[in-house]
Image (tube, rainbow, N blue to C red; front, top):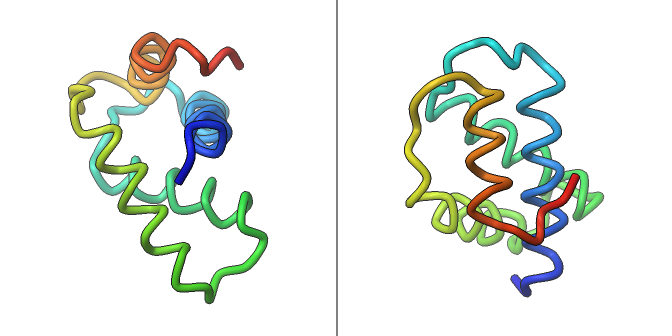
Length: 87
């Protein structure tokens, strides 16, 4: 996954986290779901082997961001860590 694609997917993930229940506590399951949906939207298909690799790549990129606080605060940390994400 190139950096331009990662930027698109991270921006979409941050948008999803703040659009639905931003005051709800972030969880690993919620993060995985939002990443998965963002990847699916970007790919436009769900049955391509690259989808799974891209989900894993994005979750790996997010591993250094503490999974604490609310969905909204996590999205802010995501945007801060990945300065190119300007949405």
